[in-house]
Amino acid sequence: MRKDLLTDTMQPKKELVRIVIDKEKNVSVDPTGKKAGRGAYVSLDPTKIEAAKEKHVLDRSLGAKIPDSFYDELYSYVDHQKARKELFGDK
Image (cartoon, rainbow, N blue to C red; front, side, top):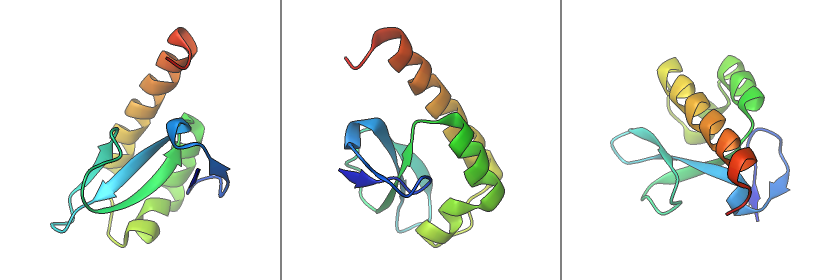
């Protein structure tokens, strides 16, 4: 179980995606959950990502200025994963 940064609820790790920031302040999506660095978990809900972009939620959590382009990349990733989950189920 991990805490979803956007909804402030505990959810299974499989239902979340990890965002990681490394020592060089590079921010990336970590689908494996094993990259080195400080991580934050967010839900696979595109509407929550849009709200996070407006409030800059990841900036506070990861301790760095996150560019809007990353939020757009994250939105695309989450939207794709959500569609994939709906199409194929939890496989």
